[in-house]
Image (tube, rainbow, N blue to C red; front, side, top):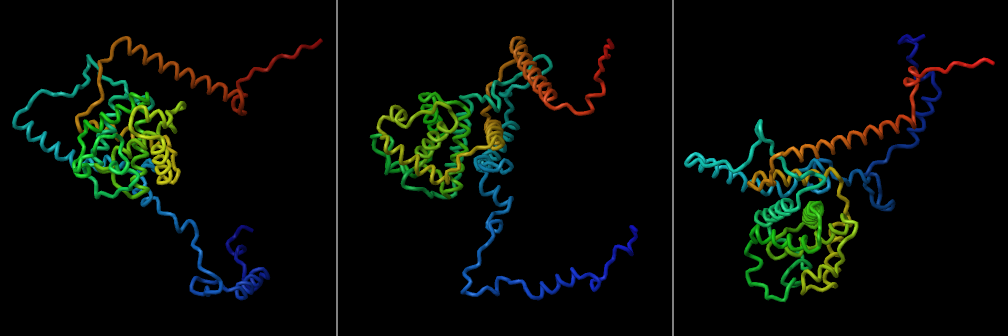
Length: 342
């Protein structure tokens, strides 16, 4: 028993194997070429219609956390030119360092975190990402619903060269800042706005260009505020900010935006974190650093208190979990009470 010889079974001595061979002969395998026209068309399996992970990540960076963001890729050309120019200028005439660095006596930190980003700096980074999208666009593919000349946001006449002249970073920043300050939106909403914007460009196979950037940004902000904030701003409230736009136009644009997104408004935490850190990388590459302040004693005590509070909360959760389910290993140190004999 247990030897290699005893495990070998002759096919002729096993009636099950013989019966299996007869069944296979009676039921030959049908291939795709054997299917006739009478049996209908060949249906492909759903797994065969899905894209591989590598292609899916490249096609939809707003859905996959490991794929690089579109705005960071579009900014690399300008970043390399800026680095080369800064290197040459520094060799010719070295100047003072504008960036603050920590030392043994002073520690510089910013108040922006992935859970609570700095509002002003985040809006600047999002505006810079949109600026690179417009500047380094591949073509001018657009849709009529986002065309500013066909659906103007104000009564002012749209210039004739509105579809040719690229907007500056300051103009994009002022437009986004006005909407966020008037609607009292958060910095997290700005990051989700950028996620929806890049998802729209990928799903609809279009470009953000001078003729449509305002309406695309407005639609992304409108959708992000409703998904992210508990008390969302209504469409009629945006009509108070943009005086000349109608509620019907806002509703139609929102409906088209959702249809182009295929109603995919989910933003995983990993995708949100990726966009946040890529925005910080974009800020560092363009000398748009987040505001740094020296670490004072009061702020250090506050950070220490927050860390201690989180640590105590984790301990309480761990203790409650141990009370709900105690393993046999924890029963070794339990003292047995002595019995009282009457």
